[in-house]
Length: 329
Image (cartoon, rainbow, N blue to C red; front, side, top):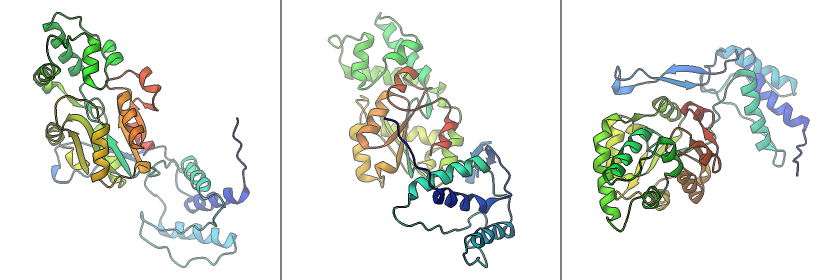
C-alpha cells in the first residue's frame, strides 16, 4: 500500500513562519567547534560538531518576527524573551491540526535553508562498549586465535570472526571449535581474560568517539553504557580513557561469562531515569539490536565492530562513522 500525505497550506505556513524568523542567516552544512575541556585543558585537542552559530543580531531577529506577526494580523512584539543564543519563541497550534507533522516539516525546512540538523530527537543514548566505543576487534581476534592455536584448532580471519561472533559467548566458542567436554566454559573464560590482558595496551577508542560523546553531552542528552564486560573492569577502562564523565551510569556484568545484556538492561531501567521510547541504543553486534528490541529502544549499529555489515543490516540501520550519529540524536 502506498501512503499518501495531504499537503495542507496552513501547515506549510506555520513552518514558514518559524523559518522566516531567521531570514538573513547564512546557510552552513556543518560547523566545528572547540570543546570545553574543563579541568583537563591541554590534555586533548578536541573538536566537536554542531550547528552553525546564530549570526543574526537581536535587532534583526526582532524585526523578522515583527514582520511575520504583522503579516498574520497579530500584534507585533516589543522585545524578545531570552538572550542570544537562547531566545524563546512560543508557537501555538490547535489540537487536531497536525502538530507533529508540522514540527517535523519545520525541522527539515530549517535544515534546508540554514543547514541546522540537531533536533534533539532522543533524551538518552545507551552505548555498547567493546567494538562500539572501544576499538578492540583486532585484539579480540588475536586473543581468540592464541587460544585456538594453543589447542591445535583452526585460526580465524577477521572476516570469519565477524561472521561467527555473537552472544551468548558460550555458543560462539562452540561454533569456532572449542571442546566443552575437554575443558569447562569457566576455564575458557579465564583463559580469554588472561590472554586479552596481554594485548590490552593495543586497544583504543574508535575514531570520532571523543568528539561525538562531547557533542551529544552538550545537547543535554544523557548517556549510558550497557556492556557484557564485568562492571568493575568497564568502569576502570572508562576512567583510563578519561571519558567516564560523559556518562550518567555505566552498567556491566557481574561475571566474566558474557552471556548477554538483556537482563542487565532490564535492571538498568529499574534504577535509571530512562524512558525507552526516548532512548537510542548504539552497538556493533546483532545482539545489541536484540537488546534494544527487548528494552524498547531504537537502535543504530556501527559497522566497524565485531559483526560484519551484512549481518547488521538485517537488524537495524547501520552507520560507518561515529560522526553520523550527530544527525540522529
